[in-house]
Length: 94
Image 1 (cartoon, rainbow, N blue to C red):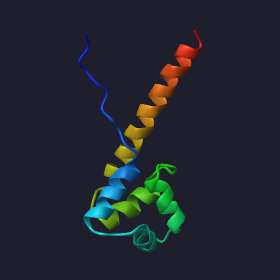
Image 2: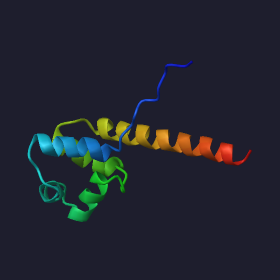
Image 3: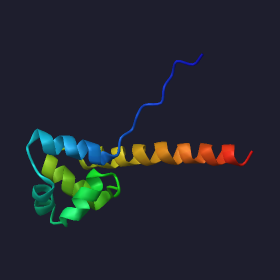
Image 4: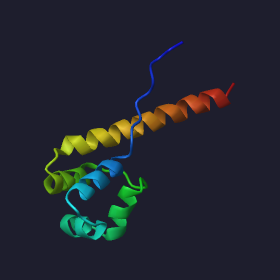
């Protein structure tokens, strides 16, 4: 039996929510600091929007985390789900 388990990779919005909770910021506070609509921040927090380079740069300035922290989290999230989707399509083709 294989004991290796795939690591759970959360959407980077989860990390953003944790950062916001740590410093007591609301979605409106973050949206104002990033100069984006509140709905955009809410979509990131809900996992409906990806974090691209521009947003990663803004988040880096706001949170003190590096830009690549946010980009790596997004990439790992997308890679995990893209890989799973590929495997599921392969099983469907049998």
